[in-house]
Length: 285
Image (tube, rainbow, N blue to C red; front, top):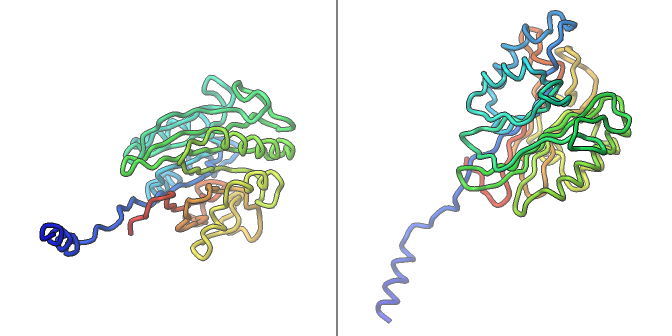
């Protein structure tokens, strides 16, 4: 009995260990605007330093980009040496626009990854429904090095004209996530959806996922217009770039960043950033 009492006293006097915490997870979606001479003073050559400076400042752990053509892909890989690139061009053989994921090598290991087409033949380059272009989704199963937390990250770019294609893309992604999400895995879906949250295509996803801006509540900030058309201060426009998360993931902060550089812009879209706390993990800080 004396021994039991001594052990109990020792435990009572020992410092209480805090629940382990993990860093917040910063994710970002950004339509880069393809490299085309038709953009004149807004062509990629002129915008590239502005764009890369934003990435350097914001340091997203998981980055989803859209409209990335091969030359831009090379520039991004050179500028992000500590990120692993996942995904290639939508036209096959690495050609055409890509919707790649860039994932921090320091923070994550990539367990599996791939890409599929938003069409009735998702395993081959193909046009879906009434879409004007081939559209893809890029995905990765990730494991965080710090705590083993797992994330299914997906990045996509939906058609700008095909309303039926967007609706079918929403249904397809909702079904794909349900079929491929692993037990205990958080889900982050990034993209330029070319659709407002009220469109039926987005509603097909919001049955199982939450909009990060809404989930952030009072911690949501920034512009409500994500497509700017190279207007530094758009007074009205479309909110078509979104971050969606599965239930259980807390959105600590959200910001649609309407940054300009003396009247110039890095893209014809603004980036959307969300800081997340993954399920079952207490965020540090």
